[in-house]
Length: 179
Image (cartoon, rainbow, N blue to C red):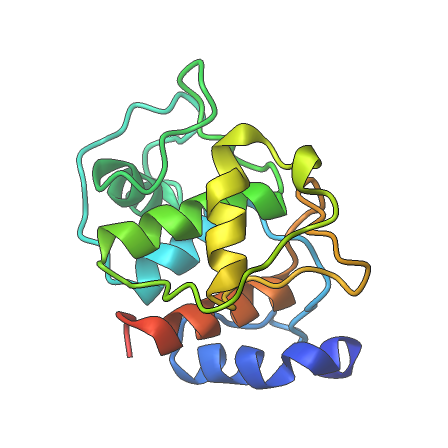
């Protein structure tokens, strides 16, 4: 079903070959499906071989959950801090601005230079939450995350599986990655 995201096909295949992403048991990838916060963090932790960390104490991350180690590792190294009130946001789909903030912290953590070669501006810059403005512009300038044809970043839109693969591939071309 990669024809549903032709623009991301190369990135999806590259991340699949590096064993960062996988498809579903029925042989599909579902590139346009949104990705949850825990799925996104599991991919980041896998892509960057983030070391295990102590229990972060998120009330919505149960012991033994498939994503528990990834969330704890990401929290321990400062890539994520949760959504406040002691929750991580399990089961919640991640927005483009949340993903941008996490990717920027990942780049900073692993010393990945974003080489801001462009001077990107987004038509909806004022709609980007304060916590993600610098990340959105920096990642846009570095050609890690791109905007839409209308010039917007669409910060509140949900990140798709295809978009995630493009971001991870672009990051792997900038620096550290697992594989």
